[in-house]
Length: 436
Ligand code: GDP
Ligand code: GDP
Image (cartoon, rainbow, N blue to C red; front, top):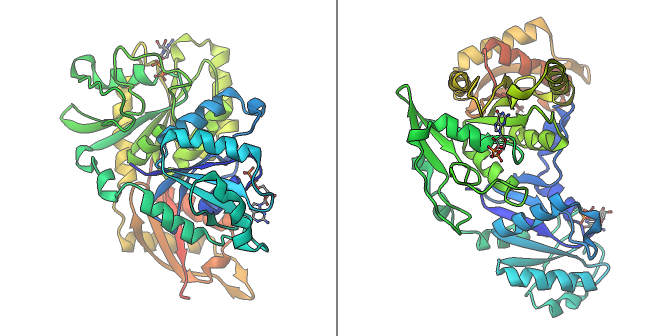
């Protein structure tokens, strides 16, 4: 499991500035996916520390009015699941009553907390900090999030407080065969689908009450092939308490996505594509997983509703044209059997082996058909390519002046590779390297 860092603090202290700094490589991805709405709350730390999830809890105000109940619940869930809490305060404004109130709340949670005094740029650090010792949370980490100052030292402290990596690599061996995660908003039909996929008689029910980090791997076989279902929130329990908004956890979903080869994202077709769907799907794409969009509850829809959902998919989710879309009924089983074939196909794509000669040949064809543009009177050259990873497939393209490649050309190449390699349902990532 990825460790989780939660950012907490009253509004305006700089949480989203720090969040953006920690997750900044997302910008490029977002620019490259027109229509992708950036999730401003959940992300991965991409540098300076081992891979982690970071959650911006969005501000615990005195008056919680502004925060709708869903996000408020998610703040609680995020705090419960956090390994380290970064409590941010504003060094320019000094200690406020809300800071004290938040400190009280956090103290009750018995989590590792780091007090972070932000906006120390242009201030005398020692004086800026002195105000906050009365919170009795120890030595503050002094940073200027907008410049990244002090952030490496902060991450070093975070690292010390995280559970040792060895304690987290509990379960790698348990994921056998094709890893499948079923993800979606509450009540879209995840548990119903999971029980169908597993087949009633094969479900082994483990009840491990009280543990937030319970074992989430459910290995099973089908037609002689090995799969592992990655559970999010007790979906497999037959007598589960209905998954309410309270129980739903974006972080658990992200953890499952991380461990999966193929994600089945369920949309409740009777409700259509919601903004929250677009957010969660954005996170699936960020993780680079092969994706099936299951349009569930198809059974109850009339013709007009079906057309509406299809249109919504085209408009709202245009950034995911690569994903496979399947109408299903988890309740009645229609379309579910076929899901296994699709999962297998997507797994093959996500785990594809691509040889250097093949990748280089495709690169040559693509550049012959459509040359990269000139920059400073010199043509950008793309010379050869090799594989840089799987799940998702990564192609590393070597050339000259690749930093100047426009996004439109990168997109062209990406699509060219996807077509030539006949990839289904998986994103493919291109990285460009020039000699320094
Ligand atoms: P949030 O409400 O806690 O997410 O706060 P934001 O990240 O939106 O920041 C609130 C304001 O503080 C913005 O105008 C930021 O530009 C500013 N800010 C954030 N970090 C710093 C910093 O390190 N130094 C200075 N001077 N301003 C900062
Ligand atoms: P979860 O919260 O995503 O795990 O959703 P559940 O599996 O608990 O399902 C929520 C509700 O939707 C239950 O009442 C299910 O019976 C119902 N449901 C699930 N799948 C379907 C379906 O394909 N068609 C219809 N009509 N109802 C469904």
